[in-house]
Amino acid sequence: MLTHLPILQVIVPLLAAPLCLMLDGSRFVWAFALLASLLAGVISGLLLWQVETGGTLSYALGGWQAPIGIEYRIDLLSAYLLLIVSAMGTLVLLGAYRSVNKELAAGARTYFYVAYLLCLAGLLGIVAAGDAFNVFVFLEISSLGSYILISLGRDRRALWAAFQYLVVGTIGATFILIGVGFLYAMTGTLNMMDLAQRIPSVSESTTVLVAFTFLVVGVCLKLAMFPLHVWLPNAYAFAPSIATAFLAASATKVAVYLLFRFSFGVFGVALTESILPLQEVFIGLGLAGVFVASLVAISQHNIKRMLAYSSVAQIGYMIIGYGLDSQAGTTAALLHLFNHALMKAALFMALAAVVYHHGSVLLKDLAGLGTTMPWTAAALVGGGLSLIGVPLTVGFISKWYLVQAALEQDLWWLALLIVVGSLLAIVYVWRMIEPMYFAPASSDRPRSVGNTPEAPRSLLLVIWILVAANLYFGIDTRLPVGIAEAAAQQIFGVRF
Amino acid sequence: MILDLYNYWIVVVLMMVGLFIIVSRGNLVKKVIGLNIFQTSVFVFYISLGKVEDGSAPILSDSVSVYSNPLPHVLILTAIVVGVATTALGLALVIRIKEAYGTVEEDDIQTLDDQQ
Image (cartoon, rainbow over all chains, first blue to last red; front, side, top):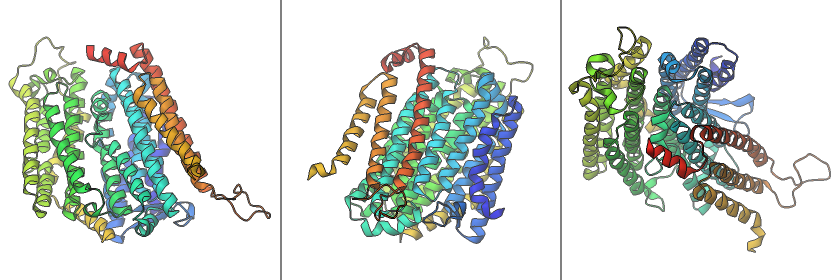
């Protein structure tokens, strides 16, 4: 049983998704989906433990050995990502029941859970697969799942946002397909380890350069790197709150993983030594993302949209870490990936609680939230502080590592700009906090049912688990830092 | 010489036609069609890769010694399924957009959204 964990990781949610359709009643469907994702979470925990004790796992699908057969390969980086994605998927789903019932029509609830599980299975598959074409297939499974999740939003603009994402996402995935095709033409293999061995002998050819370009642009479309981010703000703003929390915590993270996997694991490129000035390009785009997206975030009135722009900015930090092209930079990016998943999951779940009572999350809906929904408001403050990067929160840890990585290469101006970028975060987080504590609750608002204006307990539980994780991993950093450092070392071990 | 690689020229032309339709047309159904043409160009690209000169169809036979590579064909079979699923979902979204907005023109949808 334990030897089959790599495939079970993907199969469990993938099979559970259609089974949901056979169940009746949204409570059962939710419980079943939760069970499946919990199982996936346990499996990823076991996988991480196996990888840490026994080294990289290789699983031959159907007993056909790689490179002929399809290989699932779990190294430390994959195991780390699997744990992040499945843990976030489970936590978000744990708090989902009441919010989904409130936001979605009765007929759509089952499909929500089906799409959720499909998306989860696709994301886990991308990370587990050691085969470039499998990555494409799982990418499309997860993307189709996320288009459905977004389109289920209550506002009609959700449909339009989902359609726009579908067009952009399909172009991105097809670019990846083209890149894989060029690689296959040059090397005759699809297995990532094989590719990594064969590419150096043909690395001078333009074809490989073109393949790299297509893959990177395709992945960057998926991870919403500035200026390829235009699909993201509307998709996050109008999707059901639970879907936003899940996608923000997992989907872009997996795309960042792909960027690292392809460029360092498969191509083994040193960005600094290539023909194009890639290091400058990525650091430049990362910085532009941080500043432009933060400035746009400041002017938003819809909090979900504001945090969506903030996501684009935070992805900018990860791109800077990638662009630094060093072990320290990679460590910082991987750390930020984990930490950003924690803070955005906490914040978007807290917003789900606000939507639960007010139906929307415009700035005016937050007025007086500090007295009407004290626990939710406090959670928003906690997540916001983490987003800024205040010491004792996870946000501080990853920025600290990123600044150190910049200083390691004597890029003083870059370190300075990273800090200035965080100052911009203070502005938009403050815009969110101010009405909660310093504006009176408007009296004409319909009070929520009964005497409990606070969010449902199940939702509150999840929000506070996530906020507590934000604080805990900000103080006791051993787990994420240890894994991120070891994973970065493993990536660069392949390269040099 | 250049025409020897005519299949790749077809790929490039189809790809550009597809992308151009996606970017330039405001009608959502046309956008889905453009997306389809774009994807199809990549299918042709893969299938061209698998063709071995003078190779026959990859079916085992005593009279044939050179076969075309069947792997790209199989990959594209999968990619076609993915493409069909994407098209179906895209068209389903277009129907829902038509119901919600009463139009499938990008400009009209933007105008309606701006009014909100």
